[in-house]
Image 1: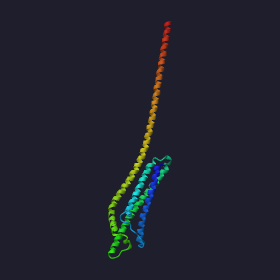
Image 2: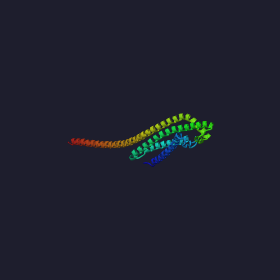
Image 3: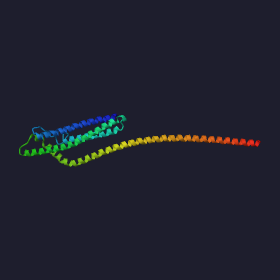
Length: 252
């Protein structure tokens, strides 16, 4: 197995590990929110609406890691064509298992994105409810966790979420088409490699046939020269015999 393939594999495993840890952190925050809804005595600190700790930013980082893992999988697939024949079966099985991992992570990230949108919306609704209570003089610990800037940013973020969902769906379709195009390109590349090997084999065979034809032509020319030489010898012998016979008749 090539060193480049091993490097891709190690990078892929590290990326998947970090991606799963990010998903677990986001899911932990969502579970904490659900626990607080069921039992308000449980402390829940809502994440900020913007910045690296926001759910949207964490989701973006996870999506980038997933895209990087898919790129590594494509690179491993291309590198697999240069693996020795004895290791090709094991390498192909490993790449297929990595492809299943990416498929499972795709579903996990999609579900997590929906859960994060629902959690952000629930936070906003809870803030709104607490704000209305605050007008009459009542506030709770949950509301105290969020300042006015966070509420405004979260409201703006959730207002733009609906507009972005249409674009997100289009990007997902484009990503699916791109993955399909990569698969077709990989198949075409394999077919081209096979055809190149066949053409190279035909080229070598043509050279061998041409060499054999040239050798046969030389043998035929040599045989023709030998036959011509024998024919001349035969004609000379016949003429000598005729002359000898005519000489005998003349002497008698």
